Each structure stands twice: as structure tokens, then as C-alpha cells.
Length: 394
Image 1 (tube, rainbow, N blue to C red):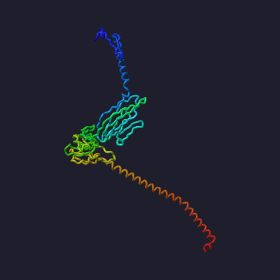
Image 2 (image 1 turned 180 degrees about the vertical axis):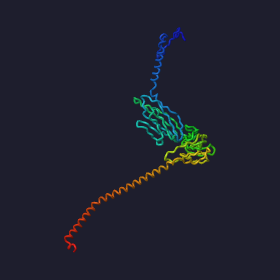
Image 3 (image 1 turned 60 degrees about the horizontal axis):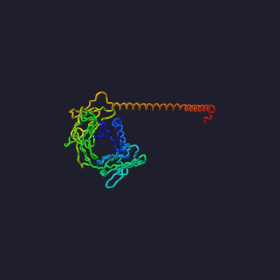
Image 4 (image 1 turned 45 degrees about the horizontal axis):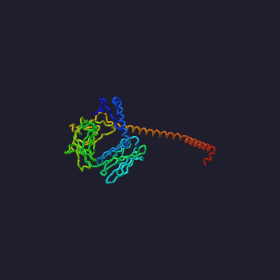
């Protein structure tokens, strides 16, 4: 330190001309130094903000390149931090390929518009997430490879227009199916008999991916069970215990088949007997059993048989107790029908007799009148004979 700057314990801070002009003595510096430094910081911020325009805070964030899987989907990021006083006016996504640029998507005051037919029903942009203008492309085709530009236009309160752009290169490739893995259900690989469980074959690659399930070990003779990604058992039996594996392939793999490692499923306990619902007969379902290489048809319901794999023998059921309810219902119906027929017959006979009696009562007055008339005529003839015997005799 020089002599003019240091005098004992006093340190003089000389001002720098043209900047802030700070010069304090030691006695007052200890009280005002902190305040002055804070003031300096505020002045620096104001100084910087005076030279940095507000629109510099609006900037689009994206990535330079993304790789998409053929027949899959991909998202092209385009985001910004929303700011008060700036309203998004227009959003445009365009694609450049083979030295030509075409507008794919446009969002303005009138709504969303997909302008290229080859992207119809395949592209979308979030609507209700402020600051997110990312483009989602589904069902990717090889021809979708190219340079995609996201352009956002804002309008300020004083009607100024600000435009920002970000470009992302997209490369669509065909990916062969990967080696699949098998995922068990929540019950795991050790499951009690009668439970419902499943095994799921999981693989990645360009869709569509075909699946096949086998019972056995890869590389050995195995039994084809299913052509779905999930292998399901509605009611496990002890005979379902064994090893299972799956294999996958897609068109991108040039016919290459990927096989999973085998997993072993263990079914514990005896098969559960399902009580039948009254009026419903036995049900059958196809299950794959370890007897040979042919799927066996297993019957479930009232007469669940012992599994042959356990060494048990299948014996016919013995009928005991009261007759089955299946015969009681037809007998009751027959009795009711007989009573109804007999009642109808008695009713018909009773009605017929009443009609005959009514007819007889109705005809009786006529016969009485006729009898009286005949009797009166006969009486008159007798009187005439007595008065004129000769005339009547002639």
C-alpha cells in the first residue's frame, strides 16, 4: 500500500470517475459500506436490464436430433417459459426434406390445422399445457425422416411481434425385435391350484411384433400354446406345472426369431372343486396338460376328477340320498298340468248342464200354451157333436 492510501489503520477508497463515485472514510465506512454495496448491486441489475431486451427471456428449448422407430412414435420437443405480456399468436411446424419445405401443422386463432395429408391423424400438439409446443408423430414411416422446425410467434401488449425457431433432425429406422423377457402376474411363479394367473411376453422393436408361447425348453421339442403376448389360465391345475417360454419376431428383423429364457410355473395344492349353479350343466375348457404333446380337454364343474398325474384313479360317483332335483321339477310340472286339465274338463261339463237346464225352462211355457190350445179345440168339437150329431156324422 502507498503512503497516501494507508495512514495508520485508515483505508481510503478513491472513487472511479464516471461510474458511481464512491469514496468513504473509515469512520463512516463501517456503517455505510454494506448499504452502499447493496446499492451497487441494484444499480448493476438496473444497468443490465436497461440493455437486455425483454424478448430475450423468450427462447425455445429443443434437441438437435432424435431417432424414431419405424411404426412407432416420437416426440419432438419445443418448449418455452411463458411470460406475462407475451401471448402466443401462431405455432407452425414445418418439415424440410429433399431441398423442399412443407408446413405440417399450424395453430392460430382459428384452431389446429394439419396441412399435409400424409400426416393426417398422426400428429398432435398439446393444447392445455402453456409453453409446450412439442410435436408428437405416431405410426412413423421411413419417409418421415427429415428436418423439422418449430416456429412460435408471440405478440406483446404494445403489438410488437416476436418470432423464435428451433430445428430438430428426425431419423426413422427399422429396429429388429429384442430378446423377450417373461413377466409373471402378481401371484408370481408359484401359484395355488384353482387360481387365475398369466405370463406376459415383453419385447421391443418395430411393430408389428408377433408372439408365440410354448411349453417346454428352447432348443428342444415343445408344444405351441398361444399366439398372443399374454398366456392366461382361468383356473390353474396341478397338471399345468412345467416350463414355459415365448418367442418374438417382426418384419424389421429379416425373419430372425428371438426366444426368451424358460420360466418354471409351479402349481401347489389340489384342484379346487367348483360348486355348480342350479340349472346349469357342466362346463368344459381346453387346458394344456403334460400327457403327451396333444392338448387335453379337462372337465370342470360338479364332478371334478382327480388328476392322473397325481397317481389317483377316477371312480364313478355313487348316487345317495334323495333323487336329484332335475327329476322333481318335471314331475311337479306334470302334476300341475294334470290338475289344470281336469279342472277345465269339469268346468266345461258344468257349463253344458246349466245351458241344458236353461233351455228346458225356456221351452216349458210354449208347451203349456200348445196343450191348452189343443184341449180347447177338442172341447169345442165335443160340444158341436152333441148339438149337431147328424151334421158332424155326415
